[in-house]
Amino acid sequence: MLMQKENTPQMFDAIAQTYDKLNHRLSLNLDKVWRRKFVKFVSDRNYDVVLDVASGTGDLLLELQKLKSQKYIALDPSKNMLEIAKAKVPTAEILISKAEKINLQDDSVQLITVAFGVRNFASVDEAFKEFYRISQKNACLAIMEFALPKNFLCRFGFKLYLNLIIPFYGKIISKNKQAYKYLSKSIVDFANNVDLTNKLEQAGFSDIKVKNLLCGAVKIYKAKKIIF
Image 1 (cartoon, rainbow, N blue to C red):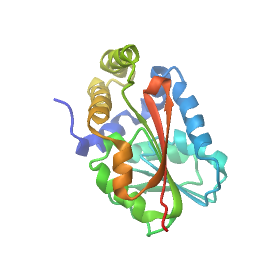
Image 2: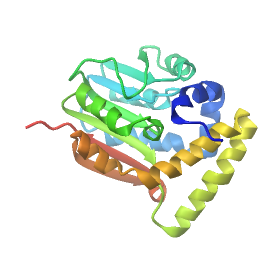
Image 3: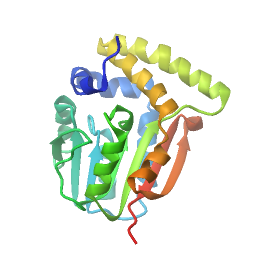
Image 4: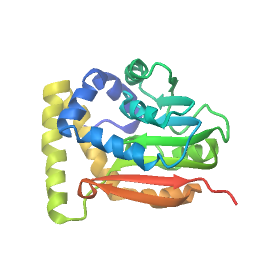
């Protein structure tokens, strides 16, 4: 039986030490390229306070240092993951928390980022409400998440990769095949059932832009909190 979303912090705690190595190998280091493109996508302005949600081991947090913001906050429910993130970016503030309830003041953040974490939220709606609450006027929310390509061959190849390759190598490297089965299933379930653009609009965000990577298997969303 696959684990439920409420158990994901324990799952990520268990695979934290091998998480980076496996991510780089499974993506053939493309994850590094995606993070660079992600940061470039949001680098059209300056941000004083940056909140990286589902920060994990801090690879995106590290890349976000290029923005030269005054304050960086890493938020994740996994303590073990955040310990690795803190080692990578010692100046970052750490928040062990879920995205649905963030201990930050209203209108306090200028950029919120989430890389490959939205699909693990217990409630996307509640998380986006929190993002809107803590965002300043004209703040930016940027999300990178897996999707299913529209092209048949790309879609078939990506599903094959998710269902066979990820669980197989997950078992070999992390010794936790179940965790990587969950991760693969979560990608397909999320892509089939959640319209992120619609969710962003419902939460109050607007001026939504979408960038496709890897034949549409990876999407970057950028939205703003615009108050007239």
